[in-house]
Length: 272
Ligand code: KIV
Image 1 (spheres, protein in one colour):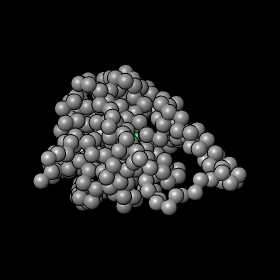
Image 2: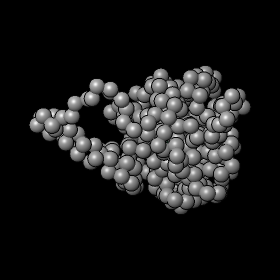
Image 3: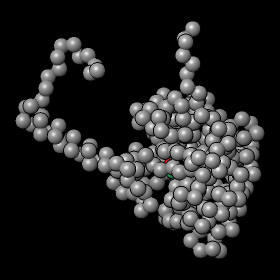
Image 4: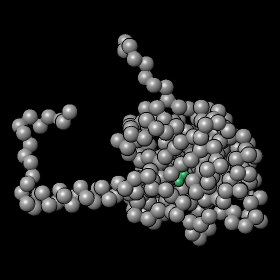
């Protein structure tokens, strides 16, 4: 038997217990190798349905099928060994009824072995969140801007821009927490509203475009790496990976064209 016990993977209850403590660090992830790198630094990874836009070039997250989420979820689980992996439920896979949500969420959990799922929506999803958590599926909520509602909200714009709109978003957050979510993403809301919600709910709030007052933060990995062609204004770019890729590919093309390309030696061994 092996002498080494594998590093314990973070669980949904571990994240839940971080309410009001050290900020929770998270990123989206769609890919095994970058998940392995991020795993050394984050508390959880979200296989977000944003992968439809970031990896597959769709205009919104709406076309993403469940099978694609499962494929990317499995890749991320192969790369990350320590972080909790949360997989997004795509549009159309959970809204119809609690039993539809359970059937598809159970498939995601069985086929990816992820530790939790995320779904969008406030009050309208309360019954479903309760149904899933009662049956052993940890749920992360998502309130504020919910990108799967793009066709009803019209554009990806900040939510709760006037004080009159705050009560509905606060109510969404309260109900999601009370229904049993272990944490919730709050997307694109102004700092005073994010602060109010963070104070009111008993579970960690994970902000994206919602200021540093939340209990944790999430960003789309490609956005913070400087790899996405267009990013929302609130995103800080921590790297210039897009420029590095462009430079590397341009140099490769020059080397090929000028016949400076190195040959493989006959072992084809991997580099140290
Ligand atoms: O799909 C996604 O990447 C998300 C994050 C933006 C929170 O839901």
